[in-house]
Length: 303
Image 1 (cartoon, one colour):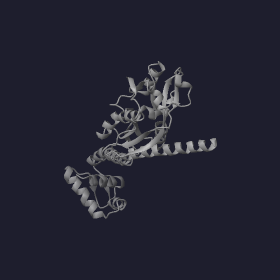
Image 2 (spheres, rainbow, N blue to C red; image 1 turned 60 degrees about the vertical axis):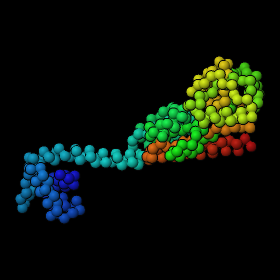
Image 3 (cartoon, rainbow, N blue to C red; image 1 turned 90 degrees about the vertical axis):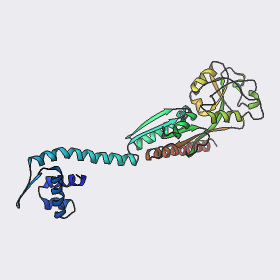
């Protein structure tokens, strides 16, 4: 039994006329008649009573029509849904992101994506950069938004956001009154940083700022910047963080620019090749372009 035969039978059952059914199917009548006879032979029952004047469904034919009509409708719907998944109109998308990205690119990109692909189920997973790297390489994440990652074999990364690094200080710190902080001034400070194993690229970036100077004296390590800021607020030390984290306002914490304006960046990469992932990456690019345009307008107005 072939799907084509079932479709032919439903058209004949609708018209109860082989000539009109063949016309709708854009075929001649003889092969249609042959296909229906083969279907009856395969099923072992007569589906149609035929005379020279009329065609009508047998009891078996009516039952068969009623059973296969919803089945074929479901099959057609399934085919449409599969096509939509293939084009990124439907399905699931898992997106990992470092928590600091929730202050920068993630909100706007998610808003754009939901507008354009409302039928795609979006799963957002806050993960450190190195957790995302493992998930991307193993195909558990469709898209990752990572902070200063190392280059990944087989995963093409593109920069979607750049921002300055800032020094986070307790409000009563001696450097809190300065316009900016310089690395040599931090030699005697206790630092609170991300662990290397979870944010190796960002960790290495911060350490590179101290080239030619004593390495930072790390007294505490924390995975989430909110925890780091809480420890800074408690007076346990200082930290170097992306400037966007300053939006997480805490009255006990002061943020100061670093001399020479060192930068950190967010990168995006796809762990799977599917249409929804490509669309989300496009949303991230648009977010970056819109942010750059807003900054340019603000700088022009300031001039």
